[in-house]
Image (cartoon, rainbow, N blue to C red; front, top):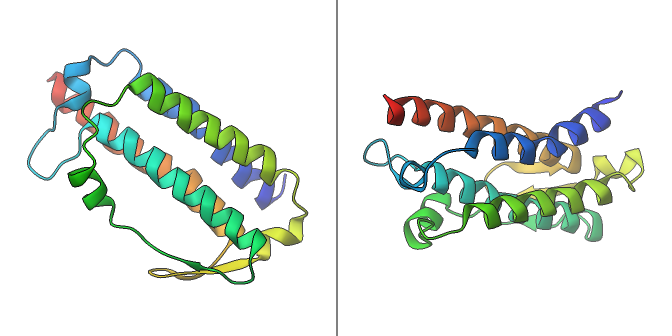
Length: 156
C-alpha cells in the first residue's frame, strides 16, 4: 500500500471514529464546555463537519483549476457566531460520513499523479492534493484526542 492509499484509507476511517467517540454521550455533556475558551464535544463535531466541507471544496478546486487560491477561514468565529448547541448530532455525523464517503469514492478515481497537483493556501502556502488528504485524515484524530480528554474531565 502506497502513501496515497494509506492517506485515503485513514481519511475514510474518520467518520467511524467520530461516531464511536460521541456514542452514548448525553445531550448535556455534548454541549458542556470544560472551561472558558474550550469547545464542547458538539462544537468539535460541528467543526469537523465544517472543516471537512471546506476541505472537499479545496480538493476539488485543486483538481479542476490550476494552482487555485485556497482561502482560510477563522474556525473560532465559526464556533462563536454559528452556535452548534442546537445541532442534531445524528445529522452532523450522517453528513460528515456522507461527505467523506463521496470524497473517498471520488479520490479513488484519480490517477496517482493527480495527488501532486497543488493549490496555494492563504496560511500554509503551496499544498498538494495528497497533503490535504493527509492533513484532514489526521484532523479527526487531533480533535478526538480533545474529545476523549473532555469526556474524562466531564465525567469526573
